[in-house]
Length: 340
Image (cartoon, rainbow, N blue to C red; front, side, top):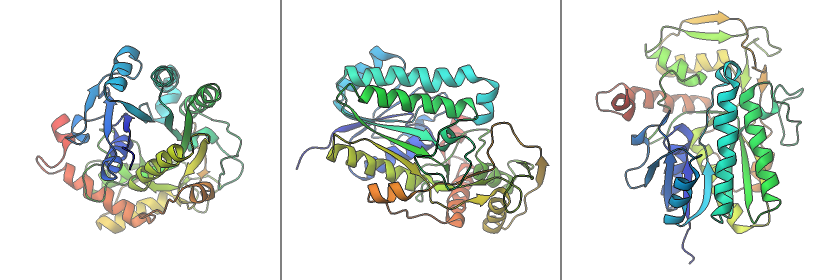
């Protein structure tokens, strides 16, 4: 049996990256992590996984790390992810998400990395005319976050066309939940993900939840999103890696979602149901850069990969998020208390 190559996970101390590192380790892949710990947590990286605290744009350091660990593939999660912040500070997003990704891709080519998996976003579709959204839906981002991801997608495709590199672009819809074993979860202070925010409100860590827009063309007027459990998403990355290795001549672009949407009010109802606590709801005007509905057409990933979601239930997603949030609230119970 061929020895599995080492996988470099950038941003592996962050929310999604740490779950991917766990999924890789669970599947017996050797893993190493690069994270500058700007928003990530050292304790999110499994204790037996080598962590380099560095910026992905520091090419000499990154390339030495890649070569020292005989890296055979890269999963790239590092970047900034807050849509309203991208509108207020677009240069930060073009620097962190686009310019630094260019540096990482160049390092991958210099080091002869044959496989690259990129953490992209449904934000590249903008406000699509129709939902569900398939991979061939025109990409017209309506915020700098989505544009920064699209620009990286284009760079990756252009580079792969002229170098021995194949890639998989995974376009996430709304990632939520936490590891079912409570080994990792969303720990960012001041996070903006709705389920995280709502769970914090139910557990009295926030005094309300703001609902941005009640006049969308949706069943109850609030925004509708396709929520995918972070552990199912992490599994998709492992399967995408296996697909790239099995067929080095083929690239993939795949939506990651369940093909089912829930409104903001439905999510808040689910959190209240799971916690048996009420949430103060504050109705606000729409935010710039928010589409009314964004739901995946996920047929491509189901056909391309042997992916069978295990947690495609809103109440289960919420329950795992609640369990993690309660762990964060226990003295010594999780790493975000240590990190402040």
